[in-house]
Length: 375
Ligand SMILES: Nc1ncnc2c1ncn2[C@@H]1O[C@H](COP(=O)(O)OP(=O)(O)OP(=O)(O)O)[C@@H](O)[C@H]1O
Ligand SMILES: [Mg+2]
Image (cartoon, rainbow, N blue to C red):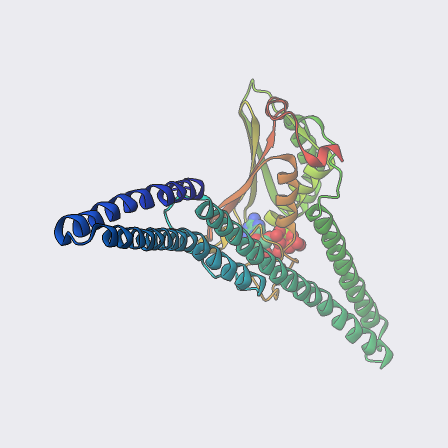
């Protein structure tokens, strides 16, 4: 019952109950004094008037007292509970749960809103904690990945200073290693920079209509030389008679395909190396599949490979070591296009990475809304 209704009923009660009370008192007193006792009429009339007055006063006091007590209790009790909960929350205890009764009055609704506010605050706090945890992990990973090559560069420089590289051949090898390590660091910093810009959504996306079929054919032609050197063959297939026009940022899609293909080459451990590329067109998107016959990914790791700094070889001890940012960048870029990216793999047999890019039809359907596009 709403508070308004409760107050109204109590007011009505404060009028009706005394009236009924007066009637009962009058009848009862009249019956006792004038019918049962039947004494001196004047004395009894006097007594009747006095007792009636006392009775009426008592009825008014009791009715008012009881009604005021119950109505105010039904309002003050939940307010006190709310006050307690607000105090707990202001002291940082977001787990303090307020039990909502089912009276369905205004205070109950207020308690419900309060509870949903507490849940949202708790959620925001948890998100903030995860974010802070991520930041810590990020800093630890960056420090680790930068410290390793720096330590090694300093070691080689010290070797040169101490005269360990005492032949021109040794010196050349030392210098080459230093150069390679510095290059690796440069690449890592460049990847980190790009990743953080994508994360902050501060990279503009230059969207245009791109024929993905022609784009992939050119790309494969350009890549042919590098692939031949690696002893890798490429097979490319698309369905005939379909349109592969997508809305995309050419440069960024190149980065996506580069990162995926570089992974395929890096993790190819077979004598006969194969990369297969398939295009599939639907009304609202085109799916690209890049498949290799490399070492594959264990099932439990597939879901994590798009996480930043995630590497299956967590120790980063393999000579094939990267920073684990390649696929995180791929994911950010594809999401920036409004597409999706996923992987399927059989450990020991090979891996397929899939990504979709939206067709102009899909982008029109969503008003072409892409925050990156406008920036
Ligand atoms: N084609 C693939 N075959 C097997 N494993 C793969 C393949 N692609 C990715 N992986 C696994 O997923 C991990 C993450 O890949 P990602 O490209 O993000 O990082 P990376 O290659 O280690 O480093 P980076 O690309 O930043 O130089 C890799 O370390 C590797 O273990
Ligand atoms: Mg990679």
